[in-house]
Length: 240
Ligand code: GLP
Image 1 (tube, helix red, strand yellow):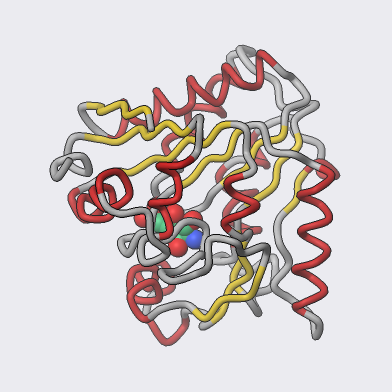
Image 2: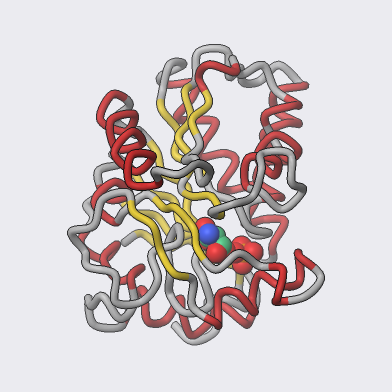
């Protein structure tokens, strides 16, 4: 895994946006795998800036998102659908029909999972952007998810629900389930770009990079990917 350590969150975001822009410029109809969470917000802000300055266009880009909460309507401010439009899609020239986000609504969630795997098969990802959970999760693949997983429904761990509670106001409002791209879907990407910022990610970053490759730390699988880049600020890199 290539590791780029930056001074702070802003430089991490700039480096990440540069890598993503390079992918788009090299292949204007590329497929980007996108992530939610607070970590990629600075990167999305930079990409919006580059788009406004006409350095990059998303008009032919396709996107596949990692995950979504089960049971939240698209217009719910904490849904990942809402997040992606608010933070990125509404500010760039991407075509609505080129945006794909797993669906956590309806009576047949298993069908939603199969449908999403079909979308992924049609859209081989050129670059997958990832954050990392404090417990080493990627997407919503919680610890001990089998490495051979496809899109599936997960029961969120208490740690993840607590970590994400800050956005919902209180933990009771955080959904208990989510739909997530599996580890197979994530690792099929040609290139993987992982971002981590802040001291609270230092243990997870250490386990991802230096720990055993084990489902106990889902992100550790990235050690086996042949083009994974970690862009990490000094604080999150402090235990490397
Ligand atoms: C959520 C998302 C992950 C994200 C993680 C870390 O659980 N499903 O994709 O990487 O949170 O979020 P943050 O960047 O806010 O720390």
